[in-house]
Amino acid sequence: MISVLRKNKLLLIVAGIYLFLLVFNRDIAKLAWENTTYYLIEMAQILPVIFLLTVAIEVLVPKEWIVKRMGNQSGITGMILALAFGSLSAGPIYAAFPIAKTLHQKGASVGNVVVILSAWAVIKVPMLANEAKFLGPEFMLVRWILTVIFILGMGIMIKNVGIKIQGEDSPNEQAIAIQKDYCIGCTACVRSMPDVFEMKDGKATVICSDKQGVETLVTKREELVTTAQKCPSKAIILKE
Image (cartoon, rainbow, N blue to C red):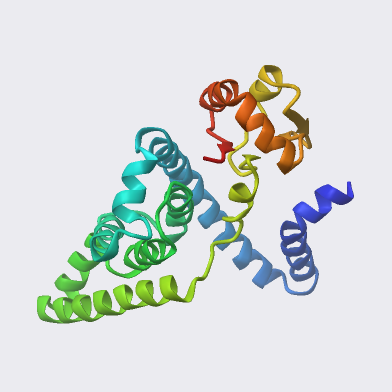
């Protein structure tokens, strides 16, 4: 019970605020509930499509392709590709976060992730079309040029500063690891290799220590690779 409460503490805090408003100010509580309902309906319509897109990126786009074209060594070419990807996107900005995380986990640099998110937020093509219609093409063009300059500069700056995305180091520190966000608890890996994996709180986890994991990775690599390939959500990470 304590574990469940900790995992859902933000939801509990929000629920507490709603109860407080319901008791002391019902008008604000009603307005807040209407806004919440609106965004929940919007998210219910958009997030399934985003989930399918992230799965498609994970399964269909080779990691080597992303590393080469959007990785740390991709240079300005990678940033231009990230800028185009963010600009040609559709949907609200929160839809970009799972896609950006998936691209980063497959090799896209932090700088290029920043470029994607920034372009998605402020220079999407549909947004530019409306801007030109209401504010004029010249205004739109000047604003676009200045925004692109600052977006690219921000991406370069964050890349050089060395800021890391939350949780990005944990899979790489271990020889064998499970991406908890991806694991769907199907138990396929546990059935295949019960000496390496086990279920804990509905998610697969690695039993052996990192030292044992290195030894297992060497002695049972072929079996581990097969198990990782059979994972429906591609949650198993094997160190090269």
